[in-house]
Length: 293
Length: 240
Image 1 (cartoon, rainbow over the protein chains, first blue to last red):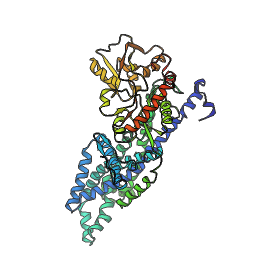
Image 2: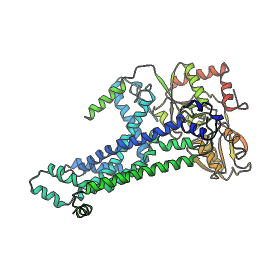
Image 3: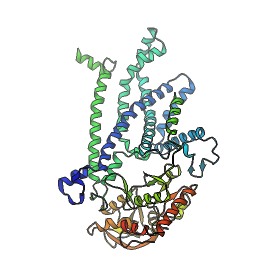
Image 4: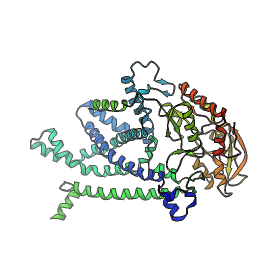
């Protein structure tokens, strides 16, 4: 990166360390923190949407919709994450390619499945074989976000379902006696009040999501844990910066990073909790009222 | 709405098709000196130089893809890349699921490395990388097999005492032994295993395999392959 680093075998001490920490590989490592943060920033709202949909479906009066909502939460929660990430993503990828194959090459005569192989026509490859590396990475990232959202959405659905049932029945009956329709009761009374009941469960999910990101490497996205392992491993003289096994230091650094993320999340979640309790018919809301009076 | 998104995605992804076909080469990027990520984060090593030369001779545009060793064959079969070039030994078990090119490294020696020359490689705990011929050999030898996802971790296991020895390609272990200041030593005699190292292709990809076979043969014929092997694996490595 710097001209002083052109000949790494002949520099020492602090300069060596500086050059070492600014190699292209380390820059990739630093960028992967942003990858992880981007994943969290996109997945969390998406999972909430899936969860909200799932919880509404599970409470529905329409039987097929209710069964669908219940099946979604039960099935996805029941399958181990790692199985889900290996099996579902390959199935999703192949499903997309199969659909495109039907559209793009209807005249293709060769079989798509040959033993263990899966072959669609070259035009249906997703992303196409000659696409740039970043297209492949973005595609992998998108699959990852979708899968994470689906898995964590199922857990969120269960949390939100419980939270919706926890809103005191008297609140809803009062709204009904004012003449509100079912939809109005749901939008104006149920949803604003349920968040405070959902928050502990959702904050647990958020913490688990933060720590689940190493699963990204199963999907070909290189995350911070992959880079820490790759950079920390012993390096022989064939590398520009040979060093013994330094995985301990890299993983210690990761630990600090994860602890920092946890600490920051705790702060934010506590704030949200205070806000949501404001004016609610809960013990925390009551305490706020007393303190203000 | 869903349909609309799907159609848009289809259009966006289809627009690039129809140009010259790119061959995607899958490698592990963690097995020096065969293949590794250099300090700039690019694929480097013997197979990088060889692969680029083969593609040039076969008139193909090639792109490098990093994939975990564990899932390197399944991802070839589901079409995420078109060939594996990752120090993969040609064995009968693998021949059942993929097709190999001719070998570009002669049948290689595997060797044990431990902390003492008399390490118990017949009955002790021996480390090897998951899914390698060396791992199957350890499992059959009577020793307790300890598997790791990468080669680097197998060597680390010997250094910290988790395993008494590691069994791997001699070419891979040699730099670790030479640079350990006597901490790591060879145990026993090297063993010849497998039918050399080759590229792996899908069973149905005979055309692509033929192109690479021709390119490897031309490098063997004009004598450019042997110097490349010596450059990466040292003076006393086996050549054709």
